[in-house]
Structure formats: C-alpha cells, structure tokens
Image (cartoon, rainbow, N blue to C red; front, side):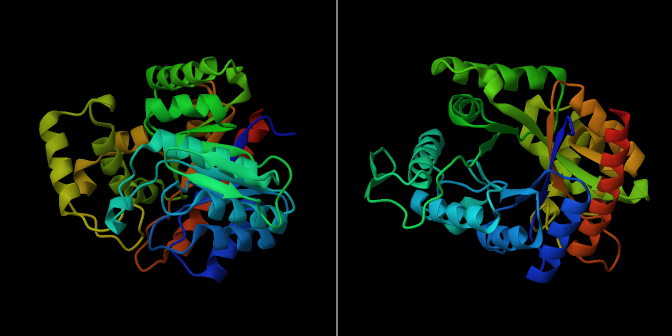
Length: 349
C-alpha cells in the first residue's frame, strides 16, 4: 500500500471525449483521487465526474472544489448520490467558498455559515434521512432523496482562510490548503487553525487529513514547463499579498501591472499573458508557487512538500503550453511526466 496519497485536479477546458481520456490517464499515472474543477460557464463538474467514473476503475472522484452558492445543498446531494452509484462508492465532495462567482452576479456572503449548513444538509440527505433543517442560509423540510447513498462520502474543504480552516477542523475529512506558497511557518498556521476548529467540538485533529494544493506542470523540457506557469505564479503572488515570498517592490509592481494587462483566467490555455511576465517572473519565483520541471525535478520537489509533514498532496494539473497545442495535449504531457515523477518518488519510499 502506498504511504502517500496524490490527487490530480483537471480544469475541464476541453470536450467530453478528451476529458474522459485525461481521466483515464490520471488513473494510469498513479494518482489516487481525481478532482474536477467547478468553474462558472465551463463544462459542468458533476456531469464530467460521472463520465470520469465510467471511464475509470479505482480512483476516487469529486469536485475540486465546488461551492455552496451555485447549487442548493439538495442538488449537491442528488449529484453526489448519482456519482457514488456510478463510481461504485468512489465519490468525494470537495467544497470551498468558490472563485469567480461575482462574474455571474453571485455575492458569496457568510461563507462559513453557508459551508457548514451545506455540508450538514448533504450528509443528512445522503444518509437517507428525513431532513428538517432551519438554518441561517438554508431551510429544509423534506422526506429525503428518492435514491440516497447510505454511507460516508468524504468531505474535503479547500481554503486559504483561517475561519474556513477552523471549520474544516470541525467537520471535514480532508483539509485542502489552497495558498500554493508553502513554508514551515505557513504550514504551522494552517495546522494551528485546524486544531482550533477540532478543539471547539472535542475532535481529535488527526482525524482530518491535510493536503496542500500545489500547481503542477511537468515536461522533459524544464524551461518550457517553467514558462507555462509564470502567469500562475504572478496570480498567486498577488493573492497572497504580504504573506508571500519577498520580492523587490518595484519588480512586484511591474509584475502586477503586467498581470493587469493579461486577459482571461490564469488557468485558461487560450488566455493572453502579457509578454513582460516572461522576464519579470523568473524560475525561482515560479518555484515559490508551483511544482515544475522534468519528472525527476518534480519528484524532488514533491518530496520537499511531503517533508513539511504531509501525507497527501493535491496537484492542480497545468497544461504545458506548446505553440499550437490544445489544453488537452498540454495536460497529457503533464500527466505523463507526473506518472514518472510519482514512480521515482514511490520507489524511494
């Protein structure tokens, strides 16, 4: 049995057939869980999860991550029951506050309460219970799902927020640390918040597995892999603010200006990256926010993350950006390289 658990996340910027081929490739590469991104206006996460379930045999499948705002908890529960049936019990529920909701007119208010109530209702419905729930965000008076799933669907909460991490300590099975930039001090903070949440309900914090979320791009062409995630590094440098790595202020300002001139989601293969990002974001800054390089280089970096005290890693797969290539082609390259990296790593254990 493998001592470590590795999760792969696919952002579905491709058609159904290519997605199913990617899901099969992820399983063949040796990943233990497959997460499907939930992005507004992109292909639907739950429909793709069911298709992935029918294309694979043993990998766990879930959202990475969905949110409590675009779907009612009853809709989540129904989708999860369907997924668990289609996968023969391999479903998990990955949830967080969500991103990009403002673009479709949704204000993610009261996130901790919305997450708590969503998870409470889903667990009740999946267990086949009549659900009478009076909450601050949701109210239910229902006889339950027509075809419930009786048993546990693991809940993974993804966040960078202290408040949501404490909630994960209270009720999650897996806590997904979403900051990308990891250090001994930041890891200590996440673990402290998790412990505080567990203590509030008298729970043993060891019941919660912690999986840092990392951006992963793998190619035999290490330089190309680094170039493919420079926009990611710039994006996360802006997000983490003063909690990120030290970067000269003038250079940081120039990076943010170039970022503002870029267009499209940072993970969209067809995005426009301002050309100045190529020189402003060097390889060292890329490595602050991504696991990147050749398979052997990536294996070494994954080992460094595990040495921070983790037994699981959640990998947001990034497409290698070759001229004229599609997102699926770029993801296949990363998945192939990831398989080699995981083999190198596991052979050392």
